[in-house]
Length: 317
View 1 (cartoon, rainbow, N blue to C red):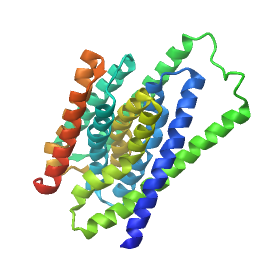
View 2 (view 1 turned 180 degrees about the horizontal axis):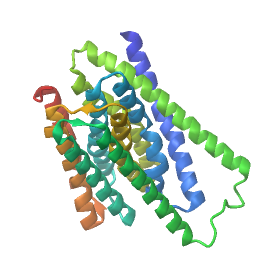
View 3 (view 1 turned 120 degrees about the vertical axis):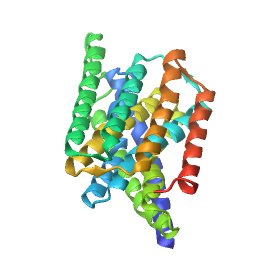
View 4 (view 1 turned 90 degrees about the horizontal axis):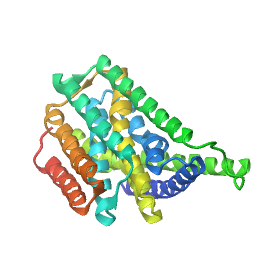
């Protein structure tokens, strides 16, 4: 067991360092293109930080562990919203001026509702999976349209003269290196986190909704921490919104397209509604006040803590 704990810690180190590279290069790209950080966070950064969830859920589907595939995705949304954004904005509440937040926030809630309705029959079939992948295409087209609109407002978008092709290549390689560290770290955390949890006798569904979800959400967490230290608030927010959307549309969509996924009753009755409630606490007041305050952050964090406590003590799977 000692090796499991050592490799688990090594995975955490890789994740933290990878997140450092990741945020630096993503914000460099944002400055280079002139695009808003919230948009960069919701596209490039969220696509990369959702890679662990995608990998874990697809592998779980192929190995016929549907509760792990679903629990990982829904648990990650709950972790991203409740733990990561709750902690982030408890430390630093801030104003949200971007209209992009409104569109992305409502899109996130809409996607969760669509998944919830699709799961009412007790499973997600191939058709529902394809429907989620269609929503993924809509999300990608939506982001491309925003990029095109932002660029149309500029006469010409080009690499500033102070950035050479060599400099751009260096930043790109560091970005890829950061992604690699995050993915390796996530794999170590999930693999050995599950081994440690199994040695404690924790049920599979609980592991996927808590330990695995937390492990695969660590890229978002480390990215958010690094963004907090470096003062890139909208990058962290955009990353979480984008990651939550991708957890529904891409992670579950791809998994269900491979093999129908059975939805356990408590996942439908408890876990998906919890994700929707936490998302509503984040999105609705922020659209009205154009600000994420500490009361919201406290509600998100305490909601996550109560959910995890109930998961281990009261909810039976």
